[in-house]
Image (cartoon, rainbow over the protein chains, first blue to last red):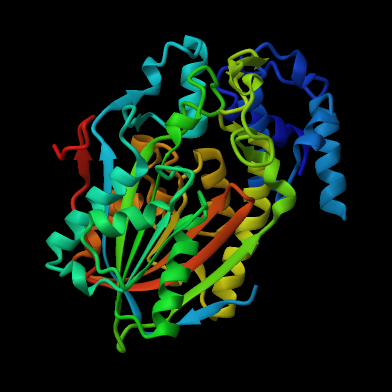
Length: 78
Length: 358
């Protein structure tokens, strides 16, 4: 698993976001399209594709795409 | 819990009743136009049936039950137990099932009671009716389940109102020594009770003037303490982490695999939750019917409504193994593995605002 694949998955599901605009440093809350449904979409991707179950608090605790990817990797390593 | 098996009870027939009145989310002017597309895509709910004021879950269940008895040529005197699963009974007391005993013309020497569960309620209802039939030697049971959740949601709350639809259902269970066992697993976790809640109006908080005051929670979400409140991330986290292991457990305890199941019929919560659960449980699209797009989340009616609307014609002609899974408010969840043989599903019943069939 690598962060490029993760970003590709996000871009597939974030239909309203311009393709190629998401980077590892993208701050979720700074995306103008970000909303609670996007948070649920992220949880669905992470649960289905990485078999990691995030809580709402987990998402609140990460700022960037890279932070989230690191969290997924840590959970996978447990 | 361990898987419980109940012998000699067959699910014989199912009916479902919805209001004719339809509301399309694409035309919901309370939601910003730019948000509507994403909302429909993420939740999977395109339209819902909405009960007019005065049309209750009890009314919808009564029509479903009456038509089921008539269609199956079942004498009301032959019903030995009536259970109504609802969180929107007609009165705080008495229990609505007892009123329905009279309205449906059932005998007086039967049990009739309400079960106050929502999204998991159909599974619990099956276990209660089948379990009591088996243990008490009853021959015929009637399970009604339904809610008018739309009346509980603030029309100005985009996190609830576009999701919920109204429906009632009726399921006829029959004692049959040739019936294959019904297998059930049931779960509860009250630590998550605030994930889906109406805060005022019960004994804990009662009513006060503040109960009725709308307050802005966030953009697009305005509600009072008498409205349904839903923590979307909490519910998603619960459903996608708890339900798949419970589904896999019931299959493994019966030495079965997902490929042994003809249809996996889930409570219709929303598309993101249901698709995540489906994938984690290993079921194909073909095994997993959805009624979400047309009816939304109809609480305890969603499983029988999905069977009637999506599988009715198919199941009338064949035997099938169904794995039913309900999950939600409580938090509460459960699974039922049932064998059906030429299950009789009535065509979907619609009623007008005054409760008459159309």
